[in-house]
Amino acid sequence: MKNVFNFALCLAVLCFGFGCKENPLSKFTQPKYNCRMANEPEPKTSEEFFARAQKHIEMYSGGGAASLDDCAFAALDEAIRLNPKNLDALRVRGYGYRQRKQYDLALADFDKAIQIEPNNPENFFFRSLTNQEKGLLDNAIEDISKAIDLTPKENKRLQVFLEKRVEFYKEKGDFENLIKYYTEQIQLKPDANDFFNRAGVYVKKGDFENAIKDYTEAIRLDPDDANNYYVRADVYYKMGKRDLAQSDTKKGDELRSAEKGNSKTSSTPKPSSTSNSSNTISGGVLNGKATNLVKPEYPLAAKAVRANGTVNVQVMIDENGNVISASAVSGHTLLRSSAEKAAKESKFNPTMLSGQKVRVSGVIVYNFTSE
View (cartoon, rainbow, N blue to C red):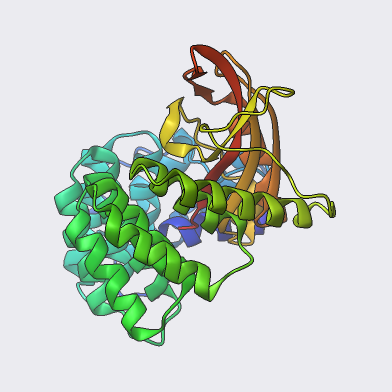
């Protein structure tokens, strides 16, 4: 059970042991906590009520994702009543309010935490998540940027904060800042993933020429990743360069077959040259073609070990746009099952070729990030 609460803390609180005195006016306020716990002495101090909240969370979660019941909230309320500067209690209660989608209350708790400890980047990080969930993306970006500024470069949390800001930029559709971020990363250390991601932003902007340049660089740095060829092929098709698109698709199929231990090269073509025998075309990366791209759940086991990264799922879509098969071909083991399940539940428009509905083979790409 102790691990359950430790996980809750990694999402909602870092303990810093802020030394504060008890509230001198607390004895004049009627306590609201009236829960009981067998064989446990009744809490009296702020720290004891916070410890009691931990036990309620452990019991209520029962080994699952850390959650707060009414007793946990009441214990935290009492801890904060007795000591308004109890940072641990403020952060955990703020996390609980986020779970209940009571965002104004969560923001109030994180505001207080920032007032008490203005140089702790975690306080701004937690508030940024709340602002995101409330739809205040500008505020979320401002908060996560503050967290980044306060975090030393050697701290591993910095990368988490940077990736979260990228997520906010994507959600807002802030292409210029996304390009700026990936360019800075590339200048620090050229990496295939950064070229790949920047290319995706160029595609959304309609800047296909720069997208091709970046996908080409990604292929140079990682020539054995079939996904790089599929996405470049997709851009070539948008540009009307079918010969180049077909060449990339063929290369991607060859690499995909090799990954499956099949030396026979796949002959599945792109839309310009369908196979009459199977009536199936290769669609490359299909994320942007879904009418309902189901978001995968983040498995508890994966959260516990902070598993993250990209999972590529090879799918077959029937003539009516239903996913009839899905198989993860790359990514962390603990994330694959969830990605496959989400892919199978996704929906696409029927694909037409020469007036006929056809099947489509392609890849759905899921990105998992741990908070």
